[in-house]
Length: 294
Ligand SMILES: Nc1ncnc2c1ncn2[C@@H]1O[C@H](COP(=O)(O)OP(=O)(O)O)[C@@H](O)[C@H]1O
Ligand SMILES: [Mg+2]
Image: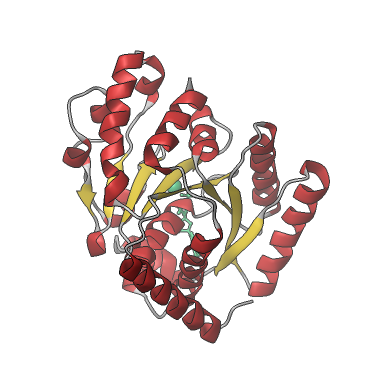
């Protein structure tokens, strides 16, 4: 498992990569990463928000889409009260730039709201919606999507459509079983992207490794599918304290163990950049979401 020196090494490497990319003028397009889980309450929203912020610290432009239809989360963690959301874009009342809100460190947040209207749009309305959405293509290096938990149509659509997917679990047996069930549902639909696992609220790095291995063995054996370990976040009281103060924990407690774990995850995500096939971008992503949704 990583220690502090490892995380520093990864972070330095990432900064070099991003500088080199700027020098070369390489624009690889927006990386779309969905964050989901089988079981609720395992830490998706906290991971999404803090990962998004860590990537902005790596000088990346990041947009975070809050796509948990039931509970809007990101705004609550940050104490924001958005007036408009994607539903207003779908209905044609607002443009994308009119609903985006500014978070800390230049992070842009898109409040999802209820997107059920997507299912009822006529083809020409959909085309208009997709054109509006593709405006964010050039504006972000990353689009992160925080979803709800479980096997609902909406969550699966966002997961299946993304090039990369982070499945969050804790050490609880029910969370592990539900993570397995979630991955199984993706396999049944031949999900072609990358699946990463994050073990949250771990009591130790060793415990996180045990949880990941359990999942990996089952996925290998019964689903014949590849997953990879993205990292872990320890159980840390600073996470709850930060939420109480409506702040992201990497900003409120940058020296905490949870923040250190989070930077490792962020560094690993950026390090994946070179190893990935060309990403398909924002417009393709949303067309696929709609395709699965309908
Ligand atoms: N690493 C952690 N250490 C301690 N508490 C955590 C940690 N991660 C999450 N929590 C707690 O779990 C709660 C649920 O997290 P949240 O990100 O809202 O989950 P989800 O989005 O999956 O429903 C948080 O309010 C926080 O109190
Ligand atoms: Mg959430």
